[in-house]
Image (cartoon, rainbow, N blue to C red; front, side, top):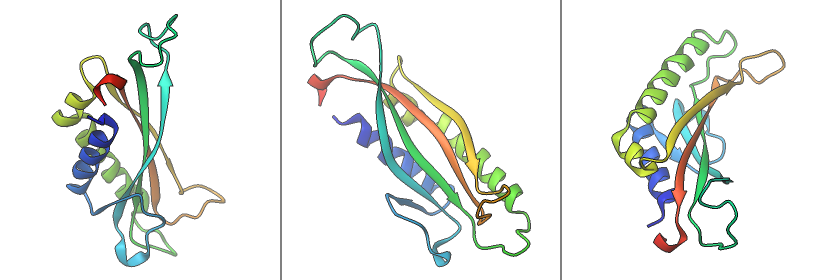
Length: 148
């Protein structure tokens, strides 16, 4: 059981209920927008009591899966009318859908968690201002090599 893939697949399904979602795709052309891009991205080990002091590489440990989620609105240049407002509406929908999804909650397990850690937009001086926002999530779960 690869919990990483299960979380990412479910996350893609959840995001797909909000807007068309593309997994592991580069920049979206204008004809595909508005849409969400989900990039599998990275995992990091978190030190846990289970792994402290052990030399056994197969000991269960906490992993923090940190996929990248990007909202890409349709082109609104040059005025960017309602760009910030529409990004915020989608941000709220995504945060609620992800953090409250029963399947994702089950996948991270009773010792794990889903963390929403903020967002980054392209709406600031000297940025592209194309109507994009990256949401920062972490899915913390126990990886047990013997279960893979």
